[in-house]
Length: 124
Ligand code: THU
Image (tube, rainbow, N blue to C red):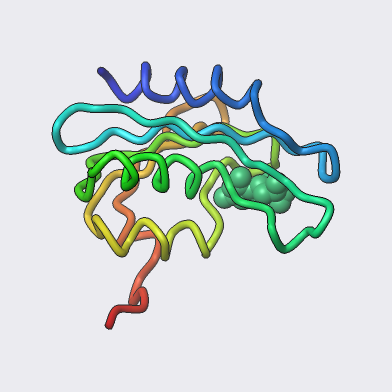
């Protein structure tokens, strides 16, 4: 699957976002090292802190299926800039610091390494 197709999948997936509080719809499509793809959406909750972002939803689904190595994640959202939040960057870095992160900006796809957009992420 090309990065453009991965982005389109994230865009399509975001239709399923559950976001009655913010109204922001986010979809993520995560490409694993073995070629499998997992999707996720943001799922909000009346207890706001219980909300999970689309990127972490996708990563949780992948890890649940036994995946530990990620190649790329595409993010599509109705927010101003379609990039993963800091928590999601840290969450993904646990597994694959050098993975690609893809979003659309000014009509073009942007591809950055996770460790470029999360320098000096926390490790133990
Ligand atoms: N959100 C994501 O799904 N991913 C991000 O990286 C940033 C924020 C969601 C969480 C919440 O449902 C809404 O966007 C507004 O913050």
